[in-house]
Image (cartoon, rainbow, N blue to C red; front, top):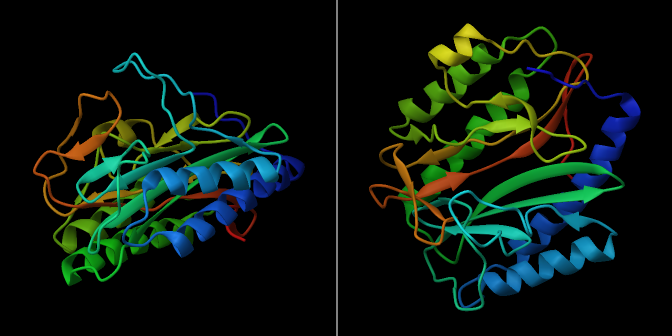
Length: 259
């Protein structure tokens, strides 16, 4: 497993890409409301990225499960959709939905990636709690990440937080290194497994990671729909997703996908 450590210059370039990601997610949170289509959100994201001179990372990505590459600047996943929801002018947000928006950008040769889950209109308290816990799981990872820390110790706290709240961590999708490419080594799970313990990641200054817990209200089991992209919870219960790109620095970590 070859992990590429980034220089301070490279981290600053990733931060610039991260600022574009943050701008997009901030704007989409402002305009996502009942009656709005995910296609409109996608158009706004595309425009903001283009105006910044950035490339939307997800558009055109191939899939082994679909003849069609991903068509969209954002992943827009609603309620039981876990990730990779395809934006469309025919998908209309409704009061009470929760919407996970994942967006990545490449600027001047470097990538950044982040996600948020937002409530549409007035949402039920159980969905709000799922969102709050998922956001807190990401906060744990940010707070605990520092040079010399074993990732298994961070993942254990993330998993414990989710499961103690009665939720489950999705195990089919994990975080990842990021830099010149959207997906680099290492794979960064949000849970502890024999595989992780056998090849634990010791965080080091210069690592840049996209940390992205996906948490289901029910079972952790997921499946992919016939479109070859949209991943849903097997039991059709809601899912939430939060993500930041972070850099491991001398005294801890820095979040690169904030304004």
